[in-house]
Length: 580
Image (cartoon, rainbow, N blue to C red; front, side, top):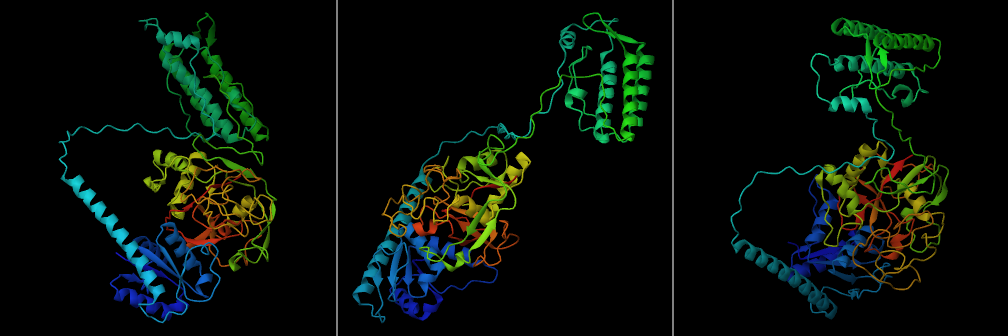
């Protein structure tokens, strides 16, 4: 286990060396000069060591205040209450850390008796001791649990769990199912007659064959204007209720004609039947029915050859059901593709905005430049909320998402935003949604995300020039510019707890960092002006939005940072996007 993690700029390595050696001489295990083995991920090693350490010393200097790495590592320490900030240059501390008491080692020359150094040692010992006490308590609890006598467990046969219902896509209606006519139901319920009963199955077979043959031909000949009601209508021919017959693919209409004729001849020879009666005593000439169907197909063949659209009157086998047409979406009106799908907001193509931070925006970073004028080229939809634990549970219950259940850190699940998910985890969920709905779900591009976050505003936030802890979930102890100090909630909260932006989207600022599809680049140079992503194969992607533990300046619409694809972090989630 590591006692101390020292976060610093490589430009300060020699000055930090004295600090590390002094701490090691005092008996502490210090991680400060990492040697990353070939094939290892630098980000993953750093993240592991941060979690493993009892305390984090952030060394602020003229160089390190511009380092995203040092600021990220200091953020981790502040979140865990294990941060010891140290200043070695005359500097203006980074936004978010100015109100923390910072040890002053600007003039330290390695004297271990120097008062400021002794203050650091006192705090280090306290944090290391706290961890040791917590570990001892865990070991004691584990030992007590192990020594308890457990009653013998009677083994029983496993019981299969009931399969969870699969979400039904809103855009797809249930397939029409054949419904037996009243006469057929009565016939099925009546006792079987000996000798005088009609041979029902051969008769039903020929009628089904006729209907299936015509339907197959219409599909092949492109009868777009023929509705399901043209093909399937009511019949009063008594028949035993049976599963629907699915017609095989048919190569040529002539084959259908020939097969129907053969079937009718066989039926006539084997049964001697020429007519069939219904419940009201009406008789139907079977040969005439078949002949009419054959003539209809022949006529359709001729029409198709002339480029006409074929419409046939066919002996029907079932009652038609209304088929729900594909839904039409209106920009600005949220919808769901299925009951368990996340709510999404559609946008038309043609939306325009300026991506990136302008000169003079407080907190602006070089990675947010140059500004680029974007015109969204294709319509798309984006999640109204960040993906929640409830959303993820639907995927798990359906056997998707690789069975991975992200930790909620004891904060609660339900409508809280999902955390501890990597890019690959997010894409497993998106693939499941795509399969369930037949639509293409994906991560939003960085441009789509920023367009949605700004909601027509050029200000740093959709709330304007400032944002407060009453408008978003972030570390309110580190406000933006001249905004008042606010609440630090120290964890995620339920999505939608604050007002939506003007596009009807919630939590675009704060709560959790959100993955985008774009590969990380250190500027906006060369970004597509049509709003599409710079995606493909890469190790890191762009994160947007800020989180519950971030200072307010990181919630700006323009703020962006890199995140390694395979990292699962306590402050990182995502929201969905979908092609329209």
